[in-house]
Length: 420
Ligand SMILES: *Cc1c(COP(=O)(O)O)cnc(C)c1O
Image (cartoon, rainbow, N blue to C red; front, top):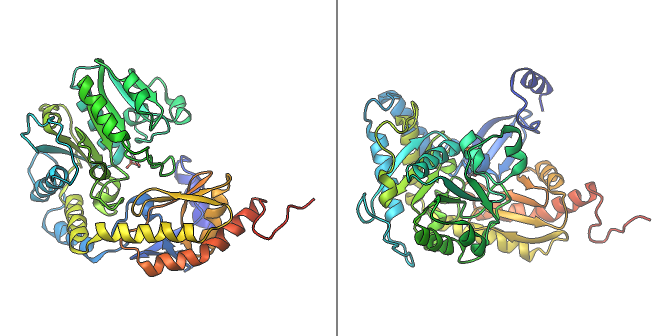
């Protein structure tokens, strides 16, 4: 890559991120190009963001038309795309899905009712949810170990990763963490003082780790018994990533609050905090706000994303292509690969050692962008428009990629010998 750009970057960009391996200059569909002209298949999608791939014509048309019509007005004035997007989200979130339980939490906004607060990122969506929790009048929040909810101080306070929290303490008081996936531990932790339980439907940043079956339903029951809100952070899992609109729909569980961001704008920054039932009305006039939140351009982009997911059958597509990917990885019986976890087009390739960074490098050399989310697993969160042919091409190179990574990490591959 252009090392001059890296040097300039180091001079003026704060050192919060790792050193980038590539500088990308162009994207089209599932492909991106770096500054040397090299092409890659993007199997990470800007971290589960670019659900329609790059430069999708529907998003382009929506954004340009909205920019030419009305770009920004703040929330001192109403705007049509914002209201339309909220209506669509409410519709999608209150649809009766097969197997869903109606937990009767729907006072206030009426049965099936919901209301949206628009923000600009996942962390901000969770900040709104934390303020909703505060408005219950109860002091405590329960969250999960190894969870990720964002980097702002409120979202960080409920993120179950001590190393990320420690330098910024004191954080919000009253937050306790329980092991993710342990329903009994959750039941023991939640009580009359609990305002809300915050959970990811599947841990994302921790490496696409689904909970045991029934965990979300158990969390729902625990919250109902204690009168606490169940907040599901669908910032990464939402908007088709799992092959459903929202991951909780597959689990048949109705949350009180859902937070969204990553995939929602298809690459434009937008976040949403949706309160269902009584939680829709907990924030009062003056309680919260955002200058940019719910801006017409970001909302127009999100509407184009939702419309295209429907028009192109991308939920079904994510399921079938995702299943093909997982089945193909398992069938290849690659030395070092222990398994595949995660739903839809949101998968982790489990490795038998901490050499995921070496796999990421080897994949890049083979023309694929993947992510070493944790040392022992590779995360894939590609555009939902990924094709079967692209999956097959990736499957063809994957054994060589893993073998090369194992060699780089000095682990024995098939047929190789541990040197004496
Ligand atoms: C990425 C992520 C966030 C934070 O989103 P930002 O837009 O980076 O603030 C919060 N929750 C989950 C589950 C995420 O994956």
